[in-house]
Image 1 (cartoon, rainbow, N blue to C red):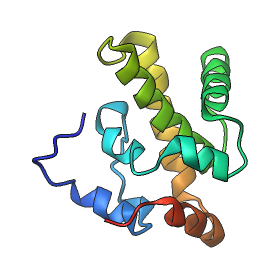
Image 2 (image 1 turned 180 degrees about the horizontal axis):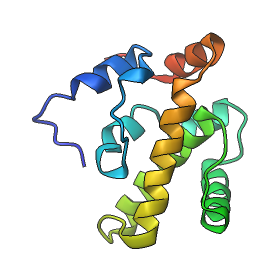
Image 3 (image 1 turned 180 degrees about the vertical axis):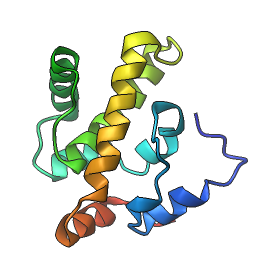
Image 4 (image 1 turned 90 degrees about the vertical axis):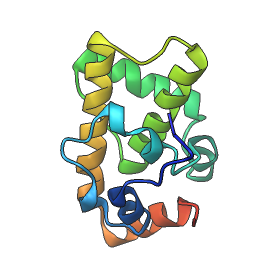
Length: 133
């Protein structure tokens, strides 16, 4: 969870400027909360013409559980990461563990990779979605 009394890490400020290569490696679930909430996945998924976020995220999660791999664009994966953080918050069961945590760490890894290989046009599309702070 976000602690409002602390300032964001330097890499997160750089990400807001589109410098996705500043993301930590490894990029894991336990450090992804603030990053996930740089976007509003509910709104962004609708604006981008994706399915409703719940349907998208559940379908991606189910596929990842079945195959062991996450697939999708950087935007889709970022929306999924946002949704998974919301899911755990609303479930009230604490943080993921075991195979769920492993799967969510794979999501973070795949998302980082996708963000590293964005075209300039894709990068601009994502940057427009980030609130300026």
